[in-house]
Image (cartoon, rainbow over the protein chains, first blue to last red):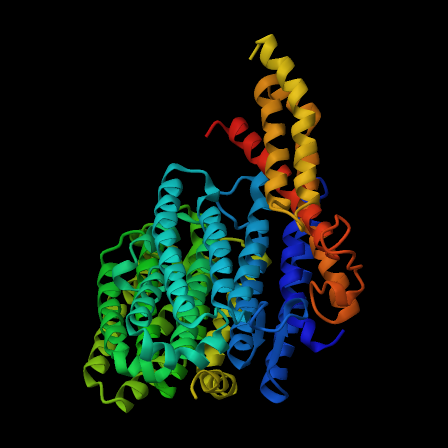
Amino acid sequence: MNIEQLPIINLLLFLLMALVIPLLKRKPFKITLILGFVVLGLVLISSGYLLWYVNNVEVIHYTFGGHEARFGIEFIVDPFSALFTTIIAGLAAIIYIYSSGDATEGIEKTEYGRYYVLLFILLMSMFGILYTNDLFNTYVFIEILSITTCAIISIKKKKDTYTSAFRYVMMNELGSLSYLFGVALIYMATGFTNITLISESIQNAYASYPVNIIVALGFMIIGLGIKAAIFPFHIWLPDAHSAAPSTSSAILSAIVIKVYILVLVKVLFRVFKLDILNEMNISTILLVLAGVAMIMGSVFAIAQKDVKRMLGYSSVAQMGYILLGIGLLSFEGLRAAFFHILSHGLMKTALFLSVGEIIYYKKTRKVNDFDGMGFIMPVAMGVFSIAALGMIGIPLTSGFISKLNLGVAVLDQNQIIFLVILIVSSLLNVIYYLPIIILAFLKNEKYRYRLKSIEPTPRTMIAPLVLLGVLIVVVGLFPNQIMIFIEAAANSLLP
Amino acid sequence: MNDIIVKNITRIIIPFAQVYGIFIILNGHVSPGGGFAGGAIIGTTLILYTLVFGREKGKKKFSHKASEIAESGGIIWFVTIGLVGLVVADRFLTNINAGFPEGIIGEILSGGMIPLLMIGIGVKVASTMISLFNLLIDEGV
């Protein structure tokens, strides 16, 4: 057994973990928790090692059953997939530690096992989406991901969660089927579903069947846009993310929608390639979608009274930033988008987890009830403030670095109007994040200087929050260490 | 359902249907069918039994615990066979090169590990069908 086996072993570890949980039902729940943590730790180590390996030694091609790529399924581990699997494993480990501190609010005790089964299948499908080099195989993993996401949203067994889960399923099925239709059209024109083989023959196919390729690209952008909550297709996101338990909102908002946009990146840069994209002027379409998302997501977020819905709409705006970086179709743009995927992942996880802790102890989700919260729950509110400042783009946080990179990328392509939109969107972020921080630390003086009003919280909930807060600042201060890997990932997508 | 005709006919039909399901699972690699189709047939016979004789008697024949073990066990069996290929021939799910006997083409004992995989899929599909049905009855959704 050698290093090439690690990607499939990662997937199998998640799958076997999900299968073992129902068998351990009659044992104490602690065994399951510890075993799950061991699995996540092992996967984190192995994906970190793969990240080092593909950047310094060689890219790994893995074919199942020894069939060559045109007949079988191929996994590729390159700087792109290795980087994002590491990020996903890291964020998932942090969220997992938090969720083990019985913060899974609203879930019945008997459902805990089921929640962790879903979590591990979710992780398996995301790893599969990133590793696979086959469009149809991607579709299969996308279906697994949507079904498990739907189950995680509806796990609380309340009426409103069923409604939002139903809306999620309907919208996402449309997205999956659009994507599948695009794959079918490409298969019709080229005869392959393997991404490497398609990209070799797509130029010829475009010359002989231009309509097929154009329609396929349109369907794939729309389908993945629905799943990644790009602005006009975002309507399922705020409901779904506010209905789910806080830990799963963090996973859905920080990781799952990013995976879909990474599939879009793969489709654009690996399948269609820059020549066809430039000829069709896809860049303009993506940039317009991104610009509208950045403004409208923030505008909707201002109007929200429920803090989790506000964070959901904020995610819509942040997906606009990522799409802006991708839509520039340049190295700088991709670099900024990838960095923002990482920094938004950290910040949104911190926001959802700190809000989750406040909801768990104070049983309130209203933005207005956050007055004076800084004196009752200092750690949660402090991490919330760091992450919110990062969202606005204050220096010393990772959000500043990603906005700086986006600005540089926009100027590089002479798209001044999008720099204006970027700044306006940041100012809109100020309007809805800053009042919460100010009121939490400055209003309600009666709580002040009374240490016994501080809520006692378990260490398993505090530690991940502090870790996230530190990480946001560290990534903001030393972005160059991680930028090496991000630039390698962007380079592997561009010729 | 207290109709004696239905009960007796069900008693007679179920063994034949289950043998047919097993036949389809085992012939998956040489004829149309396979693990999913055969497992679905076996699952339907279990559902038929529960429909005719009631939930209590159905529970006795195929308990919730048994279906949990069968569901997880089906995939664990599949993964284990894949891991044989990974250990012996360096690739997950390797068939002939990992030492599974090829047999004579067209016979039942051929195709290396594919019949073994089909058994795993069949067990999984059959137990999933009956446990989904039981969940719907118990929760009254």
